[in-house]
Image (cartoon, rainbow, N blue to C red):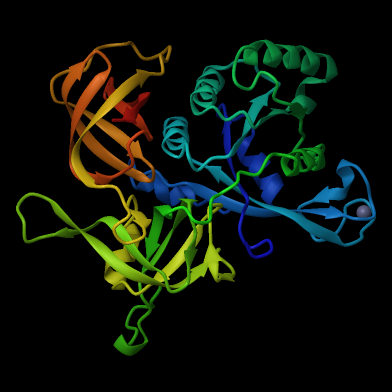
Length: 404
Ligand code: ZN
């Protein structure tokens, strides 16, 4: 890996609405462009929001005060040297946030779980987020007790005990709980230090690469001359393996072939011309954060997120593309959603990696479902799929499935 050009940790953020998740992310990254507003417009499409930050440390100072995301030490004003690059992932709204966390299970390495001290713990969404954390088994979770400045010391201590009781018996029962006041910047440095101590996942550089496409664009200006046209760009996250400049790649399901009445997709074979972390060029890339690949594809294929939901790998090394699938379904037992069995041909919305697809339940035997999909998918057996059902005319995340 080249220096600090790629994140070593993808950190998901969870927390009840208005508990201060967004301001925490802003405090950690300094920049937080609201990438979500656009994705909200695109109905059910889930788009991960990524914000990268480099955590730095002053070599002259000791303790948490030495940690910063700025170039200069906040304590002595000296130079702060880079320690770790991280990507923070966020998603808009409660339902999509949980669906994204489940569908991105193999992307997320650690979680920041925000719980505000000015409300009793757990609030309903907090409870559901713990359920998701348990389900994903992300032990490397740091609990941020926010808004402690509003309630005062005694109430904050009582609230701390509520959190301890709440997480007892869960996968994160020993997670650190730290009060952070993002507005005054209090304890942000402590949190940064804690993040640098999180274990960094080891990746096998020789594994067959597998990447989820989260964005795709046409970078050419309208009216660009044919000769100067740049190939299509795809952005996403590698979950394993490495990609290098010059590599031949395959994209599945690929392009819809219009020659057929029934939807048939044709895999795309292309070449990686350049790799970027968003601001700098990379010679090669592995798992961690969002990367962009400039390819030799016709940019009309990649424009306007045309390839979102596809996966990338080496030629001939990707799973089969399927239009029907089996799945074991597990309910999240949400308090506000009555349990009911699946109706014949009941439509469900599935989030598989970065893909959102409509499926119809054609068979349900206990928790073993057979689904017909409206569009074909390319996914690996055993992955976790977020399942949304229509409840009182709204799409609600009711459970998750494991692809059979
Ligand atoms: Zn210093």
